[in-house]
Image (cartoon, rainbow, N blue to C red; front, side, top):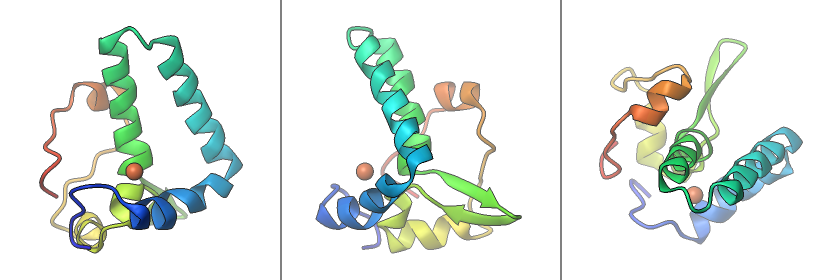
Length: 110
Ligand SMILES: [Fe+2]
């Protein structure tokens, strides 16, 4: 629960499935999927699409009425990620596509 090395049923059912009831979110996923299919043979484009997915669907935060909230499944399914991402210890960035595309990140630490 602190850090899931491999996605599992808890991650999928608890963290991914609920957002599939949100029309806006599903349309966003469809858009990413269409991009993925369009650029299937372009490794650089797939890397960009993967990063967008990673920093939104898996590790996205959103601010609603001034309150920071989690919607990324990778965070929601991990108690450790949840506590860490909302703490003062973490560095959060506003969503800027260029930053996401070029940001190097480690996936094995918070
Ligand atoms: Fe996931």
